[in-house]
Image (cartoon, rainbow, N blue to C red; front, side):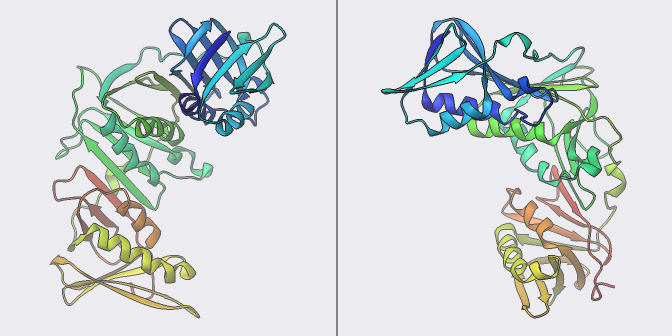
Length: 379
């Protein structure tokens, strides 16, 4: 095997597949990256048995061949190389020489025979979606998934394909929740006949495909194929496959509030900055910030003993009950304000211990629900 490629192309490819690699395993071979050089170019693959990826890297191949290179070693080398051409040459002794400028590394390798082949989704349903659109759907929901393995089913994102509930015009939806907040994003796309179903996609898999789509920033379609056990994503020269999470996702429709008593329209950027400032004081009191409407304005109040208090006052349009008071974990508020794109957001409140809702507009395809915190003031 002999090939040459530019450092920036190589680094992008290695960085993408290296994230899939698991070094803590009883199967050492999955700590390696598969290099496959052929007339069509260089293909890199990684497989941790839960998720796998293969992608193409621009290169000039002088001699076909394949080999396994340890991911941690390769990633460390490539990230430190100067911006120049990088040459790979596999010797008969099983070491690969990585040459750049006047310098080189010799790295021990393994033969590719035992490397687990990336599967294809069998009997799956397929559809295509605009890559930028799907990346945005991921960005606006994935942060609400649980990070705790104790709630394993909540570490995934529910993907629903097909007709939605009454009043919902979308035919693809992503829903994530950690039990304290829920993010739901819907869109209407072209779907073939019979393409419907719901699966729980590991957040880790969506995070990886998001990184790839976001780093490319180009136009194009993403092809998604899903069955009852696996899901795959294909975009340009990248193929990613993952096992699905098996289990019962919470019925999110049950937590959708039927009505609100107070609707607050406020500039997103101003609410974000005010929330971040209030968080400085709230950090010492479990991030609790009280949201209160009075005299036609929105107040964000936080207090921590021996630290101080803060009262942020924002201009707002308030409809419904003019006086409302409710407390939230302010981190759950700032999280969503960072991914919402509208200039204004609608903050809907119900009774003092009912959930709060944040929308981008009245006819928004995005919905964020956050549970309140009981405080003495809110009782």
